[in-house]
Amino acid sequence: MDLQITDKALKEVACDALVVGAIRSKAEQNTNGVVLSKAAKEVDAVLGGLLSEICSGGEFRGSLGEMTTIYTMGKLTAKRVIVVGLGPQDTLNVQSLRRASAIATRNLQQTGAQQVALALFLDDVPVEEELAAQAQVEGALLGTYAFKKYLHSDDNGRGITQVWLVAAKASTASLEQAMHKGSVLAEATNFARDLVNEPPNVLTPTELANRASAMAKQFGLACEILERAQMQELGMGGLLGVSQGSAEPPKFIILRYQGASKSADKGMALVGKGITFDSGGISLKPAERMDEMKGDMAGAAAVIGAMQAIASLKPAVNVTALIPTTENMPSGTAYHPGDILRIMNGKTIEIVNTDAEGRLVLADALSYASREGLSPMIDVATLTGAVVVALGNTSAGLFSNDTELSDEIIAAGTVAGEKFWPMPMDAEYGEQVKSDIADVKQTGGRAAGSVTAAKILEHFVGDAKWAHLDIAGTSYVDSKKPYQEKGATGMAVRTLAELAMRRKK
Ligand code: BES
Ligand code: ZN
Ligand code: ZN
Image (cartoon, rainbow, N blue to C red; front, side):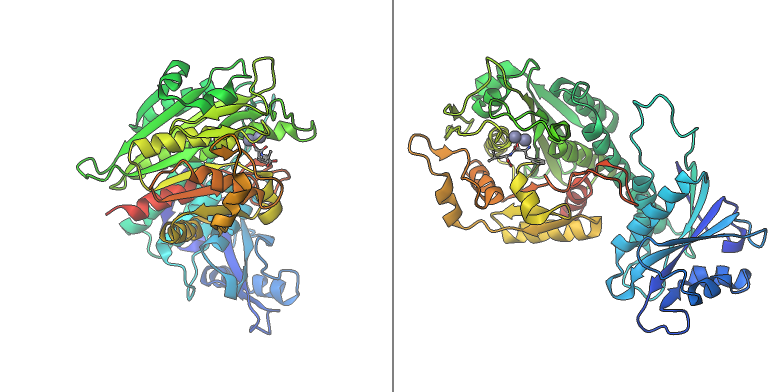
């Protein structure tokens, strides 16, 4: 998809479809509560008041993602105009623009448009023009994403090839830079989505390592892959224990970005759970929806995607990505409930349920980060079903030992269009994971399951600032949405990259 900015008059932009926005407002009486944007008004004038007429008639209400199509019959160079709703005025933000752009472009792609012009910039709203440009580009790339590589026939080659952003400020470098940032972030998100959507017979730990290593080569990151023998030397008993039931060899992927090589600060660690298939192991999961457990490496994908974006955007910080990856399978060599595993930092864990494997592989990776003196550490994982019960598919759980870091992540997420909700980490929850025969017990029972999982991870972070993002409910959608297809969402890629950008000194 070719993305460009243009300062042409709306009337003269040659394209299959021109997209303009309209807001839902309580105040406006005569248009049924719809306020046309400046661009929409301009189009309305050229079309002799047709848009106003549609609004007055009550056909179009301006709610987020609502659309109406008008064929221009030569009155504009664009063949059709799409008016897309941006939702209520009082909740309008950068995410409304990202969603509206995604919904409009996704719909246009399905109806055969190839050249699309977006004119969703607005006056009098608290969204600066650069952020609006970035969000429109992100929306277009995220909304039109599809994972079709295993389909024999595609939709007859349908696809948007060209997107114009129609802006008043057209030639300014800052808008072009914002568009570039938007396309880098969206492409990194789509890369992560590809990794999650790949079937588990293709995306094995070895293949995940290969793809991370190919990306590192292309984007200029250092990459190191640790093999089983090295894990044994390092004492990574968690990762080794989980992997021992699988015929696929485990890998420990390390990616390094040095944006501040002269700095004494070792920089931050991004840690991603990379279970390429989670059957539950000996504590086998039920068959229903087990296929979705190919997505149990979404944390790893988020971290690898974020590293790609960071390598492109080049903030002046150092970032190390650590990804423990393996399958979790039942077999005669699999680890058992009752086993005691020793993690790299020396602490022992009493295994009670082999399906709680994520915390074990993360424990080794966090210990590794701690040994390297990395801080802050942020781990991303599809860790618990309990977080889905608590927060559903809207917000990811955010667990941290540092309020400032936690606030930073929430703020970066707001700009990125990803929601994180802070969860409690009180010492009392730690009581649930005490063991009589090991340093920690692997699980703390049904109550507060996502919190007790985080309490276990906390044992392995040493004195670093640390945050844990549980994306089990937000990394995958099981039905298609107007703004995205069924499957991987790429959750946390943009927030992590945005966080790195904001930390640059
Ligand atoms: N990968 C799962 C968590 C998960 C559940 C991810 C649903 C995505 C959607 C994880 O390894 C797991 O099975 N956790 C167990 C822990 C329990 C045994 C303490 C769970 O949440 O049931
Ligand atoms: Zn599991
Ligand atoms: Zn899992």
